[in-house]
Amino acid sequence: MRYSLKVALLLFGFTVFVMPDIDVINVPIIGRTVNFSKKVSAQTAQVYIPPVGPNRTSRTKGAGSRGCDQSGNTNLQLLVPDDHLPLTVSARPTFFWYVSDITLPVRFTLVEPGVAKPIVDRSFKVKRSGIVQLELPSDVPGLALGKEYRWTVSLVCNKERPSENSYADSSIKRVAITPALAQTLTKEGQEPQKRSLVYARYGIWYDALDSSYISYKANPHGKVTFWYFSKLLSQVGMSTVSDRQ
Image 1 (cartoon, rainbow, N blue to C red):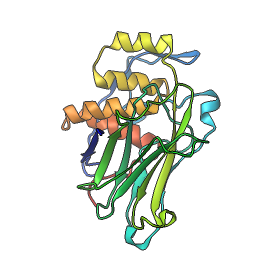
Image 2: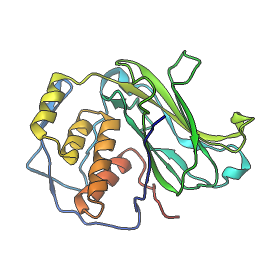
Image 3: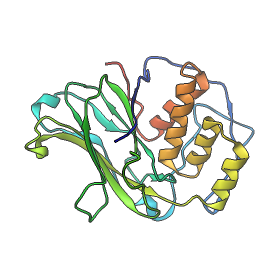
Image 4: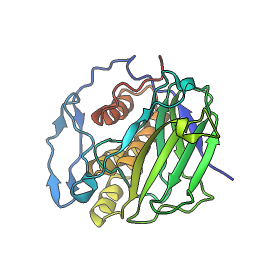
């Protein structure tokens, strides 16, 4: 039984970079083309463009709901937009969340609406507070195209009464890679930072965040990688995420 679980310490809120203007690329966005100037202000850049159409209607509950007393002031937050259905093009996407307390076990579940048995239902201990990364395990079916799923992270304080646990939940939907997206990804190559920007411009949240994190992890002290990852999170209301309390 294999699955990938990693914790990253991202020092948001404690290091301030004054970024110069950054280069961006031109990307056709689902039926329209967005043309950028050669440079865009790092302070005003919108790196993620939410999807248009029916995928804008679904809301998520990314912040934790208070449950048992043991959770105290624990901050549990899924790293997802909370005003629309986040998308992926991957059959085995990576899920991210932030937790500020490690005293309670964490339970991760992934379910398909209308199906009683969860696709994934696993509990584990997080060794330190921070951003947790979980890749969809290889021993379960991958996400099907066109289907919406629900995932939940719970802080387990009462195994016998799950309703008392603090939790946060959100949705994910796998969509097909369009020819335009495939062409742009091929043009930009395999560099994670560039691929993240492409995904972000096409409204593919999970893959944009994952690629950005890969780039950040490879160069954690790089100003551009730090700025981009924190900008991606702050754009969807998660500017307060921090690994230090």
